[in-house]
Length: 309
Ligand code: TXA
Ligand code: MG
Image (cartoon, rainbow, N blue to C red; front, side, top):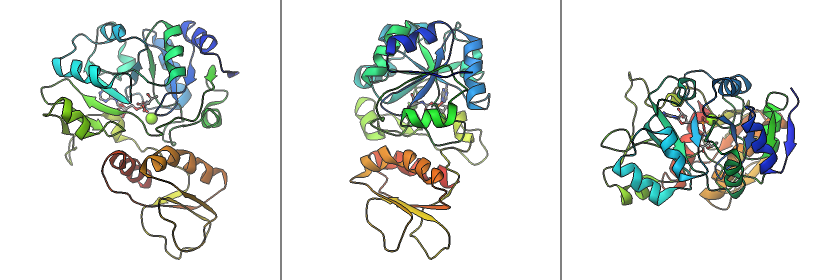
């Protein structure tokens, strides 16, 4: 398959309208999209990414009215979250409309819906004239792509089109919030924090999976965000081999690759691309400094722990 590269949101949307797969930028990470009411097109996403069939996709909308094509009911608290955070890096899980194919939701009767803020994403989605389901545009298990070049690295020849935009601003995936019961539950941390959500709905809780339970968010079962290099969250020791460091404070010792970030936001923005750079350079061990688990730091530590396995 030849992968077409374009900077035109209109041209990229034309692929979606013809039932093809398109990678596009958002403010979080790049997504790999297909039109939502098209089982064949969605199957092509799972194939291109090598994604397990039990991991549901997020539907992206360019227009608030499209929520009603996707969800049967928008609860009072879901509506408050929409008013406060759409467009933005928040995905709301709601009861799915019948017309949404089960392949999109991995068999679940719920659907995650998000309205991206990124300007190019919004133009693209407007031209698509349909909601677009999209997981992150990486090969399954690899770090999420924050540049179009990272998408190209993983998926060239496996998808129909890449809409070339800028490096994503946030760099970590959206907060996923389950709004299907009385207590809104954070299933995946992201740039929208528990404190911010509680200002809108004080009952909101962070979901903690019990040892023997099936996770509520199926994606949490799978290994994630992993470079080929070994990821370590300890202070650099005296190991042999090529090593890299990412963090906020300059460490002692020598490294083959090093990235000092200005702030936790900058760290979150940079970490997935740094993992990819390390793999390109054949780094064996990546030391990641830990950060305080507040604000974006909570989501960042979640991703670092998953990458460390
Ligand atoms: O920022 C993002 O969310 C990016 C951009 C492209 O929008 N997308 C993204 O998609 O990260 P993906 O597929 O890599 O992660 C989706 C996460 C998974 O953990 C999945 O299990 C969860 O959202 N999810 C999706 N639909 C769900 C549902 N109906 N119920 C529970 N969890 C759901
Ligand atoms: Mg993903």
